Length: 240
Image 1 (spheres, rainbow, N blue to C red):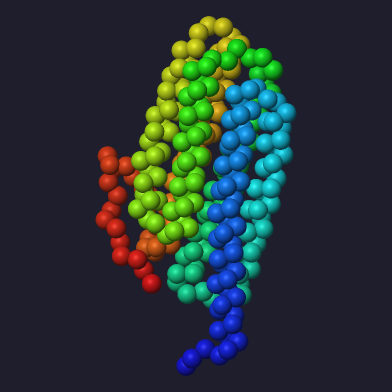
Image 2: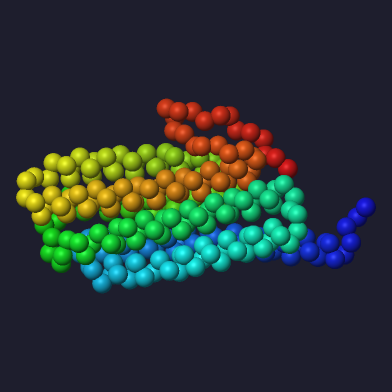
C-alpha cells in the first residue's frame, strides 16, 4: 500500500532535518580547525590571552554537541527510519562526539600555555615540528569533512596515510623533548610540548574516526581503517 500524503510529508521532513543535522555536524569540523589554528598560534607566541579565548571558545562546540545530540534523538523518535537513514543518524552521533573531543584536545593544549609563563625557554625545532603537525591535522580534518560530505570512501580511507606523517612527527617531538638538556625550565617546557603534540596527534586519530563512520554509512559495516602494513578487508558492496 502506498504511503499516505501525511506519511510522505513526514518522510520528507525527516530527511530534510537529517540533512540539516549533517551540515551542522560537518560545520563543527570547521570550528575545530579554527580552534586548532588559534591554539597553535598561542603556543608559538606564548599568548596566554589567546589561550584563554580558546578555552572559552570550546563552549560553542559543547553546545553544538548537545544540540545535535538532542535533535538526532528527537528525529529518531519521530519516525522509524529506513536502514540507510538509520546508519547516517547513528554515524552522526559518533561524528559530533568526535568533534566535541577534538575541541577538548585544543583546550588541553591551551591550558598548558599559562603554566610556562610569558617567556619560557622555547626551542624553535620543537615549535616548528608542532606547527607542522597542526597543519597536517587541519588538512586531515578538512579531508574527513569533504569525504563525508561527498560520500567518498576512497578519500576517507586515505586519511590513514595522512595520519602516518602526524604519528611520525609526534614521535620526533617526543624524542627531541626527551633529549632537551638538563635545564629544569627548558625540560618542563619540552614536556609540555610532548603533551601538546599528543593532543594534536589525537585530533588526527579522531579525523580518521570520522572517515570510518562514513564507511559504516556506505557499507553497513564498521571497518577500522589500517595502513598498508595492516591491510583492511576488501571493500564491501554498499548496503541499501
